[in-house]
Length: 152
Length: 277
Image 1 (cartoon, each protein chain N blue to C red):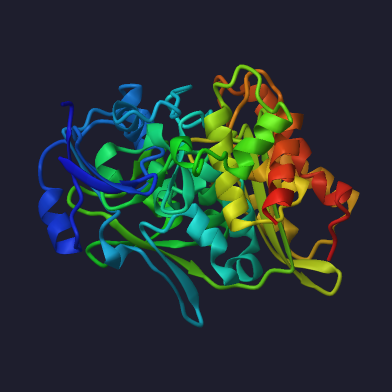
Image 2: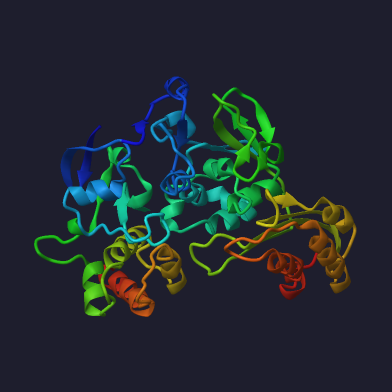
């Protein structure tokens, strides 16, 4: 079916298979930041933001994106400037192999958009759906704290 | 293409769309799409409920809270009165999956999935919730869930809403023991509600998850608790009863023996946490 939606701020129209996952559809549209990790909603590597909420695109069908406002990491930087969340991850070295990073960034962004000043516990709860196999969690939590500070 | 997808815009359209053989209804899809991926379910057609406005509502009257079929866990948690009036449901739903799962998954989906490990389901057993079907029938939660992944739902029927009676409890407790804290399926889950009279239990409800084919209420314990004080001796007795009531199985998450031991030990939280009337 034809999917019409807003992707990273721009109106997009694209044909999707009925049984195509949002994950595969978005990658097909060039959004390669959306990674497939586990493919069953456990790891969060394919996290995107749909209508203001972070969701895993492996457990969503492409036709469900119809009519939504969807964001991937590709849409975060403005005029060549990284989003404060991205910048904090880079500055603090909260990236090891980098595979989980786009998903982490999207969850952090969704969290800070809802709760601009989260406690450490709230950060951990907000990020609990994103796994890092390199286990660099301390720096990731620090990066979310730093991003919150800079946004305020 | 393995299956087709439609998103009807009204319940009338939905009834027409769900007539075809091999049709599965989907709201959040957080369980269904995993089952399709592992080949446990092979739909010919998926009917999404997400575009039907009449299924997306939270209503309240003096007697109950009514949660529409497509209300997500996140939307329910954001409903102001939930934490205050149904803290056991708040605590249970708060532990489901992750933010990403809570943003898509629904309470009705948790019920229909009918997992013995369903966290939301355990709270609904304690609160004696009722399920409203599309044909207007109302079924108690314990009659609705008939086994693991099995419900009383018949062909052509769907769940419209969940009715949760209001009741005041002095003590509520929910705990899920998993292999880790985040994004985990329970090895054992437990919840209880207590009404006190002076320093004694007037009424208690207790439920366990992941220790039987469905969530279970422990009615022998509930009966025994009436008029008792919460003391070490009381909990010793409860622990023994729990041990014989639970009928767990071995699976990838834990052995039956561990689950049984854990179930009978976890009630000592009443002492550890200093819970008393």
